[in-house]
Amino acid sequence: MEMPVQGDMPAVNEKPRLGFAGLWNISFGFFGIQIGFALQNANMSRVFQSLGSSIDDLPALWVAAPLTGLLVQPIVGHMSDRTWLGRFGRRRPYFLAGAILATIALLLMPESGGLLMAAMLLWMLDASLNISMEPFRAFVGDMLRKDQHTAGYAVQTAFIGAGAVVGSLFPYVLDHLGVSNTATDGGIPDTVRFSFWAGGAALLAAVLWTVLSTREYSPEEQTAFAETQEGESTATSQALAARSPLGGLVWIAAGVLVALAVSGWGLEKEVYLLAALLAAYGVAVIVAIRLARAGRSASMLAGIVGDFSGMPPIMKRLALVQFFSWSALFIMWINTTPVVAQYHFGSADPASAAYQEAGNWVGVLFSVYNGVAALAALLILPWLAGRIGKARTHALCLTAGAAGFAGFMLLRDPDALVLCEIGIGIAWASILAMPYAILASSLPQAKLGIFMGLFNVFVVLPQLLVATVMGSIMKAFFPGEPIWTMAFAAATLLVAAAGALRIGQET
Image 1: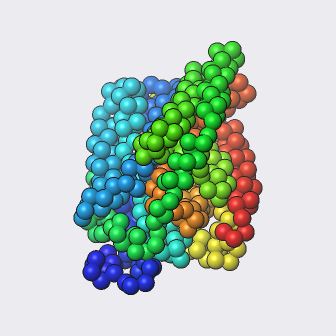
Image 2: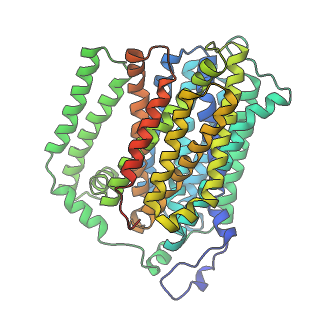
Image 3: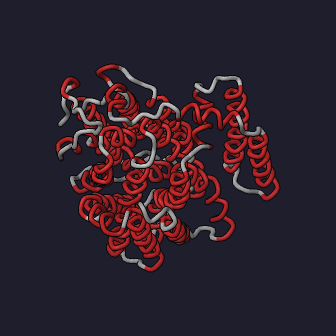
């Protein structure tokens, strides 16, 4: 990596500017991580249905993924801010640990003997990918000066797109190489099996590249760059100690009301999970306030709750945009295969050849939007953001994504869906780059990990809502018609675009 050794640090309090090789090295690991996510996103509904799940059960089976992200990312962010393992660094130990665990999950997933084993491995896979992914967001902010943040997150997004293309195309390519694409006796097709195994090897190799080719700035070097704020933790702790525990009781009451609504209105049982999370957060708030008042603000719980309640204003506005953006994405990941199979290939039967062909075509479609995202991140986003600002760029790209989702409602030729994926790819590029570029330039360096982890709560919460509530909505209003999920996705992206315009002209 292009970085001076410790004795050659520049005298000025500014990080050295990295060239393309440096930007490549700090982001290449994300190429492997996204291969893992792409295999998960494009194939898990197919795996679940091949193992006997009905379409109505898919959201409940997918709930493991967002739940692990909700729990893991703030914890890993908090811990990585406080980690320094000498030459192993601050963020890199988490990259490597997560990559090893994710590789194991990818190797075991095709051997799932039933739905329970597949769901448990999805939980392990998503948790492991989140352990690796969360510190990568903060890593770019750690390693780059502010005027390189947009370029850094654009390069990271390009690798995300490239990794997703590779991961999404694995089954399609193997099918055309003669590997069996048929699920026999309730099993998983060999195309998916071999794809998961190859993806695990690629993930580990890519993360090792970043781990071995980079050296992180030490805490002393970060201090020399004037990027640590010693008073931040004290101020957060004082603000938390001054809060009333009644706020926690309100969250608990909200959880109870949701649980009563489930039983009273006959909602899907998985909505109980949402009720439990609301109540659990209320308990966490009460405990964290007591810890802060007792002078134990250094505890993980008090730190996470205090930082969550004390998010900077710009982060709160971006959180709303993320919430609606990721609602659309999770709808897409769960429902694209059933939608394309039923409406574009004429089969809703997972055992049919047409359904498996649709599954492969969805892999191609996902590779298109990810390929578009990789190109847009490098060629469009930096240029456009330099002219109209990051916030307006984000709003424009989200609108393009809404148009892409609306296209699923209108087009019935599978080949024409490529046009939809172009719009979705432009939105995806912006979702992965613009919010983080805005945040990294606005947040205190000493808390970059925890704030990035907390920001990703607003990536996870909408996924939980989709996984727990969307099934009830579809059963009540659109039974057996999954195409309407794409209308929901288009609408939520338009709401996100409107929210992006409120972030501020200075961004």
